Structures are given as structure tokens and as C-alpha cells.
Length: 331
Ligand code: GLY
Image 1 (cartoon, rainbow, N blue to C red):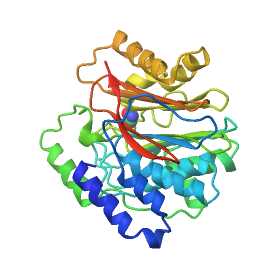
Image 2 (cartoon, helix red, strand yellow):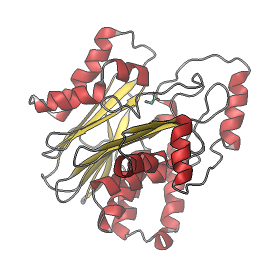
Image 3 (cartoon, protein in one colour):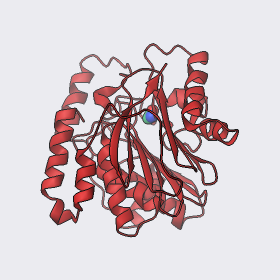
């Protein structure tokens, strides 16, 4: 979402705040974004914290804190944040309105991990408005970790989840325009958003994470990115911390990026230093002129960090004191 449309989305949300039950604190948090905030922030251990990728992270975190205020856990914070962004039809990279694959199908990937280390994932899912909620159901209600494609859609139907059309007029028109050349080329930092990756710690120190995306625009039908792959797009070790990724999933999968970040934190690196090392691992191994990847990390002690290959990646950090939008370091 561009800055202007994001602001108008937030203002619309604020205008209906009473209906939604949003508190003045939540609304202030959603509307207070500062791009010049410090790049590395430490919050008090045990203090609720939420960290999410890109501009849309501000409203996602606000929804997460609303869930917390209503008695939710870290996992509830993640799900609430993801659902808000998945349902925003103006976003071209997550949920409804996401740009389709080269054949015109919107296919979604999502995963989550909770404070016990449990995990759930869905990939290559069509017609499901809230893939992260479906991933949570896989985690909590099935003996499995990952369901794909038609099987995930069948499970959604069994849960009574209605099928919805995810291709909007805007995303259909964009696809029709793209088809005139069918030139496949990933565009970095598209409209200052991409996959939303979310990390949260609640007041009891429980950690959880989630990741949800429509993936690369105009990808081959059947392509699955890093976002539903545990260890790539997301990893949470409740004793150490969590990490999540955004950007070109192929590069993240080849380096198992989020797992790498958490393992580096286990070895004593700060979240910021761990994200930098994971980015450098990609930069050392492949050409990155047209390739963007960004990592976010949150440690068990409440320290946050973020780093990307190129400039332009930002993330939202929210605590009970309010939220800020932080430009990630890069290079
Ligand atoms: N990071 C999202 C994707 O590559 O699908």
C-alpha cells in the first residue's frame, strides 16, 4: 500500500474504531509512524512487543495489540495482525487483491509458529481469505504441519470456511496488462510492501510468529515461496527468539534464512547482527542487483533488529508505548 492509500486506509479504520472496539491507544499507535526512529530498539524483557514487515506492519501490530488487550496470546496477536492485512483488498502482495500467477490464479502461502514451538502451514491455496488462520488450524487441529493446494482447500471447506474470489478488478487489470508482454521479472520493494512477516511476544514472554503472502506476481502456476516453509520464511524458537523474511523467496529458501537468524542468535549474535549475517550469506552466494530480501528478528530478551540487501525495506515495531516505522539497514 502506498503512503497515501495506507493513511486513508488507517483513517477509514480509525473512523470506524468505535464499531471495531478500538481503544484510543490502538488508534494512536496505528497513526503514529516515524520513519526516523532508531534502527535497533531494545524493549524490556517480558514487555509485549510486535514486529512486522513493511508499512502494513503498523496496522497489523495495532490489530495484534488489540487482540492482546482483549486477553489474547502472542499467537492471537499474530493471527489478528495477519487477518487485517489479508483482508485489505488494496494490498497487491498479501491475501485478497494479491497479484496472480502467470495464469491468472491468486495462490496464497502462510505459516505460523507458537510459543511451544508448534507449527502449521498451508501453501498453494486458492479461494481462502485468511490462509494464516487456516495454517493455525492445521497446527492446532491436525496431526500435520503442512497442507498444500487442493488438500488445504478441502480442509478449509471441512472447517466451514467459505471460498472467496481473491482476484480483484485491480489485480485482474494488472495481470491483463502484464500478459501483453508476459515478461517475468521480480520487482524489488514493490509499492513498499510484500509478504507480511510478523513476530510477537506477549506480556507473559510467550513468543509466536507468522508469515502470509500471495507470493511473487506472475510466478509459474504451482510455485511456492519461502513464506510457508518453516525455517525459511519464519522460525520461532520460544527460548531464543524468532525471525521472519520478506523478498525473493527462492534466495531465502536456498539459505534457510529464518532458521539461520535464530541459530545465530542462539550462538550469541544480536538480532541485528544475525539479520546482517543472513543477508550477507545471500549476497556472498548469488547476484543481488535485482534481488531484495529483508529479515526481521526479535530475541527472547526483547531486542529487535532488521536488515535487507537493498534500501527501501522498513518494518513496524510496536510496544505498549506506541509504534514506529523503522527503515532497515541494508547492504
Ligand atoms: N517472500 C515471498 C515469496 O517469495 O513468495
